[in-house]
Image (cartoon, rainbow, N blue to C red; front, top):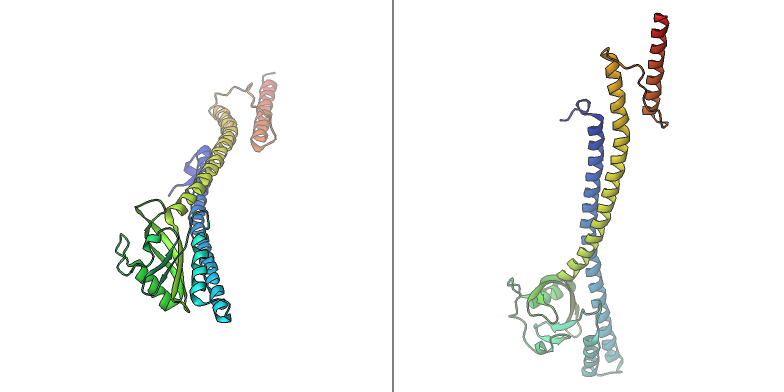
Amino acid sequence: MIQSHTLTLSRRLGLVIGSALLGIVVLASIFLIGERRLIMEERKSSVRQTVELAHGIVAHMHAQVLQGTLDEAEAKRRALDTIRTLRYSGKEYFWINDLGPKMVMHAIKPELEGKDLGGMKDPNGLPLFNEMVRIAKTQGAGSLGYSWPKPGASEPVDKVSYITLFEPWGWVLGSGIYIDDMQSEFRSQAIRTLVSTLLIIALMIILASLIVRSIARPLAETVNAMHNIASGDADLTRSLSTTGSDELSAIASHFNAFTQRLRQVISESLG
């Protein structure tokens, strides 16, 4: 354990300043961890809300069937056509599969429509559509993480989707976010936080250096002058700077008064 009395004042001040800087780094790290979690939760919440909106469209069409305004085939066609064109965050889309599972509608990959999805797995071996059906049957709605190609790309990317069951038609409505998009948003936030933190640290270091210098230099001069007096080899004509109104200036003033008094005593004794 470091004993504070064994350290010079400059080192003690440096230790305090270093601890403060470390605290800033720790706080910035905690902020970024929380920010990443917040971004993820916000994106998940956004997906859930949009899927619930699509569910509301299907429910509205079904209500018209119950009211006799539309037959079921026409209501389903209108619901699919509407949801197929929906986008949010500029590019995110929806799909609908049944409990088979068979693809009913996919806004980006229409070639999947009508196909059996039971044997489809992601690169990690997860039978994703079977899992969606399981969630729909057991929970009614929920989230699922898996890998899926982004629009315009062939390589799968980690994705988190939210699905919900529309029970009257046996439809599972879903949409999701790609993790790399979320990570890109987080990186932008992290860079802004890092730049701000570095600016604060730089300002603190500059300010701390000025403060340490303003204390250490006059203190060293005072210690040296008092050491000379204590050693019996003193220059009594020497005076310390008293510029300022802090404690070091007060010590310097008292030192100057002390040496002046010594000069008077010596002069009187020689006279």
